[in-house]
Length: 244
Ligand code: NAD
Image 1 (cartoon, rainbow, N blue to C red):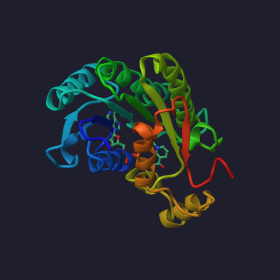
Image 2: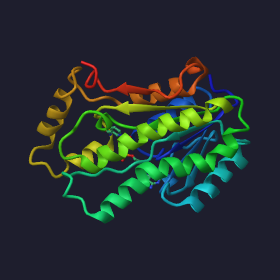
Image 3: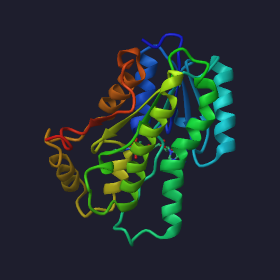
Image 4: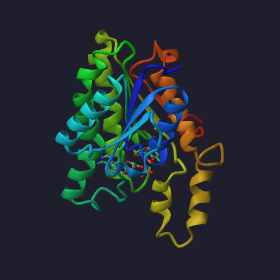
């Protein structure tokens, strides 16, 4: 489906990002992996790992140029890199607010801005952002994180409106709780991590955590010609949590 096309995935070494890299690779794309440390990226001649920090424009500019130089362009951008924040509204200080918004929100805008010159030369340009159920579910103790993911959704809509005339589609995926190293880290300090994990699973009507592959399949769909009429939407992949 993606023969001849190039996808770039930020945060593509771990979890959802890694599953996206594997899914685009399996569908025939060449894939650029931008991550803080790309040494763990999928090893394959059709995968090019580059060090980049979505909070650092110079590193993104150099990394995107490296992918475009290696593979001849960039057609698809997946803004996946993100960091977590736990706490009620007064529990994160100003530095934490600035840092999480810089990575999770400005990081999406910054990476998109750096990639647009390449996407404008593509015949099949698409952007997929990773938002979260946190954008709409009113999750307790997630004030900063939820604000950041709500902003990703709003940014998706606005970018979709601005770019639709240029044939560049912009959508987001809003996952529920996904079984990735992120969740393992989040539960590491719990008294009973397995019991907490079961509770997280029970929150979703399907009774289980979402897999990273299931999120990646939604991302691949939104980036593909099958979604040629889909732009400015948020696709929930959350085991029914937001809809039921
Ligand atoms: P993860 O921690 O397994 O992977 C995140 C990846 O992003 C890592 O490879 C990390 O090195 C990279 N990264 C972090 N900061 C970066 C930066 N500044 N620049 C470049 N790369 C950076 O996490 P995950 O669970 O796969 O989450 C990926 C995305 O999905 C995040 O945006 C997260 O908010 C979102 N999400 C996750 C869940 C979940 O339950 N796991 C649910 C909803 C949304």
